Length: 340
Ligand SMILES: NC(=O)c1ccc[n+]([C@@H]2O[C@H](COP(=O)([O-])OP(=O)(O)OC[C@H]3O[C@@H](n4cnc5c(N)ncnc54)[C@H](O)[C@@H]3O)[C@@H](O)[C@H]2O)c1
Image (cartoon, helix red, strand yellow):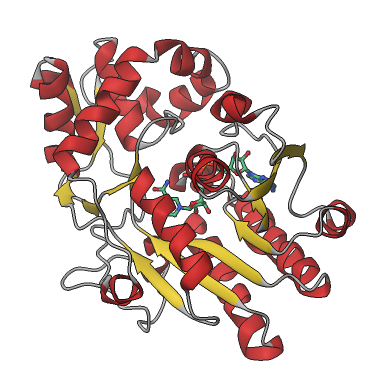
């Protein structure tokens, strides 16, 4: 199949593109705006392959999207491009609405006009909001609480409206917290691993008892591919790893793998509106034939090992734009918590 994947230079997108090209034998055009988390190094190994093409551009650029879809006779679109970090959505909400809602709107409208056969919108379990008990099913009402999750919910619902209104064959995945190699080190797991390697404090929000369901990136990508090919149009599929853990437990586990002391953990002022817990019921996607394969302990250990042995990948990032962001996000918090 000829597939346009957006956001394919980012964390999940790069693993997905590799999977589709190398394992799936698909032809992939990767459209990525190369924003701060988009990294050409993530897909360097695919350069030169006849079935792969990288295009630097924005999903909200209507003439560009229109041209790409027609020029490459694209049959399927997977939209993984997004602004993705909750903390940044608190600093700059506008950019989230622009890409995650408006950009998704441009991409899906052009896909419909070009007669694309399948469109998958990569959404997130965060659209359900904080779930104190039980687990969210696909029919639950969305209750996003951050500019990130609200923008993602906007894109998710916009995509679904294209099935209802136009019978345009859309499927949506709502994946849980994903971890693995190549994740920009602003996110919880790579931030903590790389800080710990450097004996720097690990800024843990609030009491550290927030719960997330961790999903290995290879399992997430397998689910996206499976739903893209097999999912029923107009349907949503929750995708979770079945590994619900408190953040503090994950932090302690990473420190243990690295042989670093627990006192690197600093409890810092919580994120405003921090969701306490996400949990998704994955019965529907399991029925479709997907299930997670990576046990959390195995996946986390391998991920920690990847960051330990790929320092050049993350040191370059952490010495750039990241420093100003980190100072803004954690500088005062760490001082208040008793020093950096
Ligand atoms: N990481 C997670 O835990 C997780 C969980 C569930 C769902 N998701 C979703 O998966 C998708 C990928 O997330 P990720 O963690 O890989 O994020 P990421 O930040 O690593 O990658 C996002 C990519 O999108 C690109 N991008 C941003 N705006 C763009 C635009 N306007 N046009 C083209 N490209 C643009 C960036 O350059 C980057 O390469 C997102 O839709 C996210 O909401 C992520």
